[in-house]
Each structure stands twice: as structure tokens, then as C-alpha cells.
Image 1: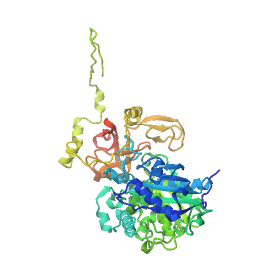
Image 2 (image 1 turned 180 degrees about the horizontal axis):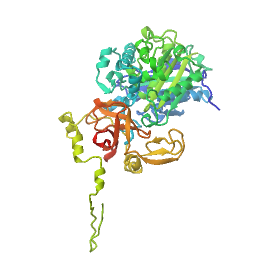
Image 3 (image 1 turned 30 degrees about the horizontal axis):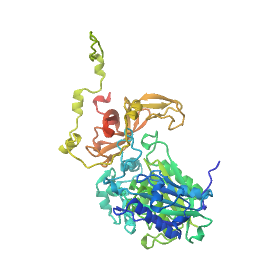
Image 4 (image 1 turned 135 degrees about the vertical axis):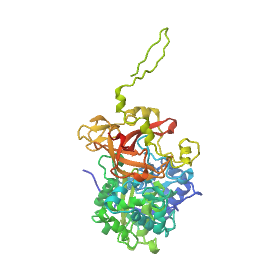
Amino acid sequence: MALGNIKDQVSIVGMGCTKFGENWDMSADDMIVEAAYEAFEDAGMDPGDIQAAWVSVTSSGASGTTLANPLKLDGIPITRVENYCASGQEAIRNAAFSIACGMYDRVLALGFEKLKDSGLRGLPNINFADPVIGQGNSPPGVFSLPWVDFFERYGVTKETLAKISVKNHYHGSMNPKAHLQKAVSLEQVMKAPIISYPLGLFDCCPTTDGASAAILVSSKIAKNFRKDYISIKGLSVAVDSGIPGYRPRHEFSSWPATVKAAKEVYRQSGITNPRKEVDLIELHDCFSITELVTYCDLGLCEKEEVKDCVDGGVFGLKGDMPVNVSGGLKSFGHPVGATGIRMVYELYKQMQGKVGGERQVKNAKLGLAHNLGGYAQVAAVMVVGLE
Amino acid sequence: MIRSFWLPMETVVRGFFFSITDKVMERSAGVQEYINRGMPLANYVQYLKIKKLIATEAARQLTLPSSVPYMWRERDFFTRFHGCKCLSCGTEQYPRQRVCYVCKAKDSFDVIKLSPKKGRVITYTKDYLFPSTNPPHVQTVVELDGGCRVFMMMADADPEKVKRGMEVEMAFRFLHDRSNFYHYGWKCRPVTERSGG
């Protein structure tokens, strides 16, 4: 029977995040130290206080030693987790369970990726590209596939996608840690070179270096560290069987992993109307179309109305459902292992009122983070809130 | 027809005899057909790239390391393009599965031939990032007659003419030569008039 609930058992009392970007003068170790020590300072803790750690990294390292070596953590359990783009949330999720079961009460979750040293463009050797049946694919190619359904059935156009990129670039232009800090115009996005139709250069997130960290404690002791801690209200991961291109009867207008993960997290956190109850969302906009499909998969709007919602600015800073006010993967960047954790970093700072300026969402109390990876088979959704 | 024969004096020579029978008329394409199907290359640089006479920007190796044992084990599915049909629910699927995608029945499959089937394009993209000698590469999701879904590269594609619902047939083509040996596999191809029969 199990299927219990993690709600209000685990809290986050410290977080860190490096500048995301082409960090030529930082190694993976440098970024790990930056992110971790910012988190330690934020929590008022020493590295020695940590009882266990989870490190998420997809291609830039393996094993808990990637964390132990730069931070000189001595002999504590450190587990490397990987689940494509959901890796960052997996680190938080597994760290949270270790606290909820009563084994530890102070743990570290850190994610990092060092993608820029290779000298080649794009993501490195992705584990799913089988020499025969995985041929012909690239990440934008794989994620672009819902376009036919949305363009033909739901009135979405390339311009609709472009508006999402414009929104996220605008948010990123106000975020000092973002990879790309320049607003772009609709015309620039529409006229950019095509990467994989209908996605152009500005519909795709950049290749980024970065690291982000979270210190989790049992909610029972959270108030000893700070007043404005945030607590986990729900955690979920959903993995679908089969690459969508081979799955019989798969409809390309939705990614079932997101739908299932969202449903489970809404059950745990008691959310019945996410658009009304959630104050801000950081979702996985590896490509503009991913954000569009995810609006529907998370239950924020119906497919029939998604174009109108985008046109009407529903998901911008002035709309009723701010999405990716950090700039999203689109302009904040996407060092794969770090992304899930830095999404929570944004929610954390927003709920503490520390963002300021135009990007600050007023009275943010409940936030949602979403990741989607692989051929879009793996999704992670998390809800966090003040108190 | 193939014969092998032995010479006397313990010299062994193996030779192949071919004789042409009426069955040759059942072939779907002869030399003239291939000539008619040819598409001009867009420019001379494409020719140089195909023939590897020019250096190109190094592309990401978007491939797991391959091996001969792997290709040999999966030869029926990778090279002969067999699929499997679930005996419990009838769903056709590719490549070989132990557990059915739909009804989860285990080890309950018939092997079926996918190469003679036609199919329709369900969705596609025109990819400039995937390393190809003549971008954009057209990547499709095809639904074959019988319902099997396959994620396929499209060969002989005119990217401007691809659309959802387009009829395709199967074609055995060169894939790549990474891991130091040639890999062949199945791609889809727009149906041409001659082979529509």
C-alpha cells in the first residue's frame, strides 16, 4: 500500500549557485567549491556538519568522489545520481528521503556540469544514442517532434514559440547569474538560423557550465538555522518505458512522464488547481516548444487555449502564472546536472524576497520546479513552499 | 541459382553460378530505376563531403560505442529489419522486446518482417545539427502498416516536401562507420511511382 507523503518533513536552509555560462577559468572543482560554500555560508554551517551528500552529474564525472575530492568531505556517504535532465531533482529527492526516513538530519545535494572544455558544440556523448536504432537524432530534433500536432491541431505557430523565447530572454537579461543576459526581439528569434525545424537558434538553450547546491535538514530543526527556510511539499519522478519514436500509439502532443510526475506531486502537496495555487514555476525549457507542451502537461491550460495564453502574456512576470522568471534554461543556461537544483535556488530566493527589482514575484509562497530529460521519457516535479 | 563445385586433384575452388530466372521481374527497382530516382547534389562541396575529400567541423559523436558482437546478436532486427508482434494483444513493435510495450506480456511474441511494409509519417523534423552530408537531415516517426512505430532517418528526402501522413517505404542504407566498421540499417524513403506496386 505504501505511497506515503514527504510533505513538510524536509526543509532547505541554505543554497548556492555559481554564475552559469562559459566558465573557461573555472574547473568542475572550482564550481563545486563556489556553489557548496555559498550554501554553507547561507545556512551558517560548516562542511563538517554534513552527514551525507548526493551529487548529480550526467557527463562531467562519476562517483561520489567528484564531490569528496574538492570539498574534502571525509568518509561520509556520497552518492552520484543521474537521470538525464532530471538528475538535479534526483539529488534533492534522494537527499530528502534520507532525512524523512530518520537516518540523517543534515545533508547536501549538489549538481554540476562542465560542458565547455571539449571544444565541440552541444551535449557530449549522450547515453541513449544506440549505434543503429538511435541514429539520426539530436536533442533539438527529438524535442521538436510535438510541433506537427500543435501547429496542425491547436493553431500554434513558430511565432508562438518565439514569444516564449523572447519572454525568457527578457527575464534572463535581469538576472546577474544567467548565461545569456541579453533581451532579444521577436524578429531576431523568428529570423534566427534553423537548428531543427521549427526550432531556431533562439529557441534552443545554450551549452553551459555551472553548479548549484542545497543544504537540506529535517523540518523539525529548520528554524534553528533561519526563519525563511522553505519546505518540500511534494517530490516525484516518472520514467516512461520506451523511446517515444518507437512507442506504439504515442501521441506527440504530450509527454506522459510530465503528466504522471505532476499528478503524483499534486497528490502529495494537495494542489488541485496549479494555476491558481502555485505562485511561480521553473520548468524545463530546453527548447521553446518544451515549455509550450509543458504548460499543458502540468495542467496550467488546455492545448486548445495554449496559443492564446502565450499571446496574452499569462506566463510572464505580469501574468497570473509566472513561468521561468529566472530566464529558464533558455537564458540562464543548462549545465545538465545542476539545472534541477538551480531551479529550486530561484524559487528559494524568490520566496525569501531576495530577488528584488522587476524579477521579484510578490508574495511568492508556493513554487514548482519541473525537469524533463532523455528522449523526454524522464520527468521530475517538485513543489516547495515557505513554512 | 548458386552452385559450388570441387575440382579433382584435391584442389578446392569455390565459385558462384548465377542464372537468371523469371523471378527477376518481381524486383522493385532495376538500374534505370535508380538512375531515374537520382537527385542532384546541391553543390560540389556536398560531393566532397560525401567522398571525404574535405575536412569538416568535428561533430559530437552522438553514438554509443558499437561492436561486432552487438551487431551480430541483433542482426535479425538491425540488418534484416524483423520486428515482433505480441501474441497477447497483437501490437507490432520494434526492435525485439522481451516484454510487450502495451500489455506487458513476457516472451510472448512472433517475429515479423517489417522490410516489405509501407508506412506513414506521424511526425518529423528537419535537423541542421545532426551531422549529415547534406543538411537538413529529415528524422521521422513512421507508423508502419500493422501499427509498428519506428524512429527513422529519411533517405532520398526533399525536406520541403515532407509532411505528416506522407507514404514511405523501407530502404536498407549505410548508416555510419564509427567504431571502425560499417553499419547498415533501415531508413524510410518517400514512395515513388514505380515501386508503388
